[in-house]
Image (cartoon, one colour):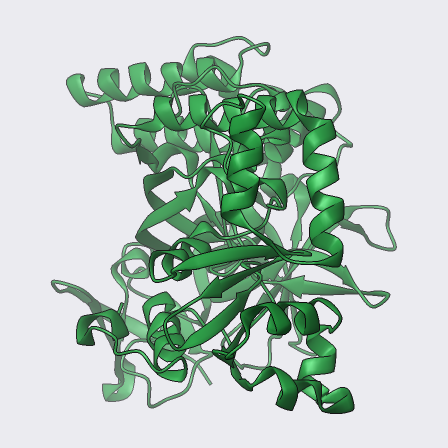
Length: 494
């Protein structure tokens, strides 16, 4: 069953489509701009939805009847090859209708996203930005900024801005740039769907006989799902490549690519050796789009939903003390190398029995080691989180190094901490004889304590463990409560 559009009434945030036989519905502005009077539309979404953007559209023209599909899509696959040898990508629809997927010819991707015509005509993406194919990511950023100023100051159309932004977002993504360069060299090269899909698409083509698949020959419009967010990213969790820095937040499932135009630092790949000593965070204002990726898990490829920041809409704010933080991190790395023999001997000692931090500090003083090298650096690991260590140390009378742990001596308790993802905080009642406790603890493992093997948990006065969640201050309040200390009310909330 289809309806014929008789009138389109624009509104502030939607279009009202009036059809024959008294039917009417609302669509988003991005679809309302493409609908025309006399179009035959078949709704593909639930009838009770206030706004519907999923339709099969039939339009009469002087050259015959055209069939279009407007639909919300999820992840788009990598290019595949059909029985005729032609390549296509599969986009799953999200409307829940009979049409389950859209097979889009990769030639349509070449024309719409990469602006490549079959006859080779048209300006290249490099030409649109006024750069050469050898341009670095930093050069790309500068060219985009200059082009944006030109577009803002001139009388260029919205279409010109869209083309320029699309060119930059393709060339600023390393995988998409590699794909585009391959497309320039060969018409047979498969085209990727940029950033993996997830959005709304209007595509022209043909519906299969069973109405299960729509075969798309031409993309009329595409609008990705986008969300503006302000992110705080730890530099020590970024990967420093030769020409860019990749920042990933596994918890939020976000990936951000930074070039020299956004991060004015002279880095190189050697930064990855000592980056874990960095404490600085950078503030990023980004527009995120879905960018699903496949990960191999237990022998199977599974789709993991990630979000990627559009390069054209990134703004970065650096902390004022970043230069000092970098100098400090490099100095710690150099000192550990300079005093590697001493550090190794200390590590062997703490493997068998606890060593108080003041003892290690005294050893460093006797060797005239720089004050930048602290006792905790001896056993610190790249993925340790300073917050947990610093908060427990602030409330300690003294603390010890034991294996890969730090043992903090509080007024009413001893707190054992491995400030690493996947570990909990262990709390023990403060013993009458601290030396006896340290001797017993050095012979036990955390598993022994959890299982109370040979009554070790009882003998050590184990009171429980605190599992770390996303709210760090709540974790601290829980540790203090279990340790018999009062916490500031405000500290219980983030």
